[in-house]
Image (cartoon, rainbow, N blue to C red; front, side):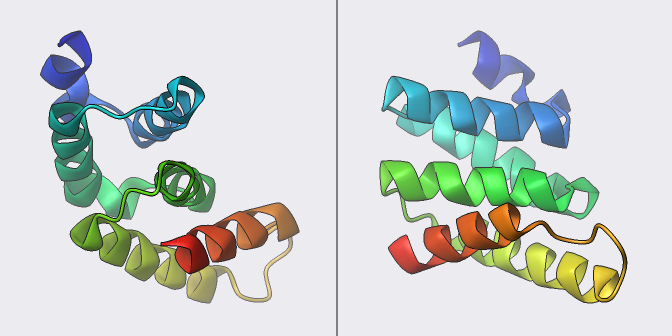
Amino acid sequence: DAFAYRVDGASPQELANAAWSFTSLATLNGLLSQHACHACVLSMECFELQNLTNIAWAYGVLLISDAPLLDTVASAAQAKLSSQSGQRGAASPQELANLSWACARL
């Protein structure tokens, strides 16, 4: 309940960490999921590629297919990858692998 109450003010890193921690518990409460998805969609432009990857990976692990969230993650990741193309330290192989795995899984 405390997370659902505070999720609207959570940073991208906090939201990504929360999604990852839910995978450790192997569960994601439906209400928490709705709050987290809504907060992510509203602030997606602030997310770093790693935050996007962590959220996609967490949903992939839990086999939760949330089309609006995943579409938003995919669009934001594509924009980040396009803007970082050719830059040193753009996307790590691990980030690309995790993002690809999550997209394929869902």
